[in-house]
Length: 170
Image 1 (cartoon, rainbow, N blue to C red):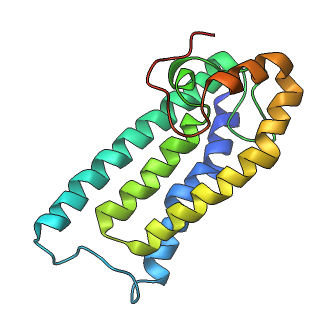
Image 2 (image 1 turned 90 degrees about the vertical axis):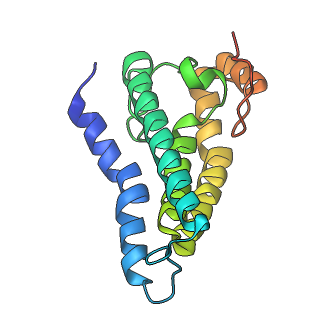
């Protein structure tokens, strides 16, 4: 059953911390050591602004789509303590197994480019590494247990991070 509070709590506790709270803290705490585009009128800075804004927008759109798919088709949330009850293999999940995390990573990389911040770029790399390890050692074994053969079939046809060009029709 869809309850907005379940999704809001999961979003506030996970992606909000990763995309808003931690970058804001890093941006402020390391202001004296970080690179920034502020006061730069170069082509590189404008390219960073535009590319960064585009990545944040695309990442956010992908994230929102995935949260909706989890609610509508998966009957659960993005939180490990309130997982989906059904395997979601529609929309962007037909191209890549982890589009929601890809969307969050895009937002972080976009923030780094937008602000010209190497410290947020470093956080994006750490975030990606943490999630890669988590997916290999926790998320995927859990999905194998919960969904069995249907997940094994999906996993064998859809890549973890780099999307396939043609959607999987399993």
